[in-house]
Image (tube, rainbow, N blue to C red; front, top):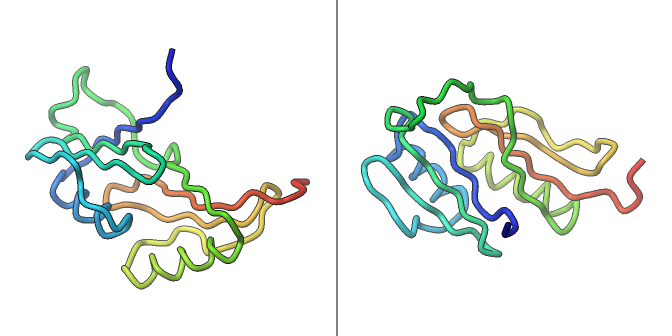
Length: 125
């Protein structure tokens, strides 16, 4: 099996979520339709947005029960991304804080999917 390189989020509005992620990631989707959009992020990781009404088998999960995690090189970068996202009116669920694993903050997309940004501590506790 190949390494994981793709996450698929079930969304209420592909158009709204696509605009959100395009603004957030500063990159346009590489594929888009009324029911699906695909982003290729730096490093090649893919983010897919699929209209939840077309998902088969029917989705039964709720958003917010998992996190899409983005890694930063430094604590300062975590803080800078947080400021950038605040400027873009992204919903922040957790302000930057230092936890046992490192510096982090958490945000939410229009559907409530959690986005965690972090920099791992040099010597995690």
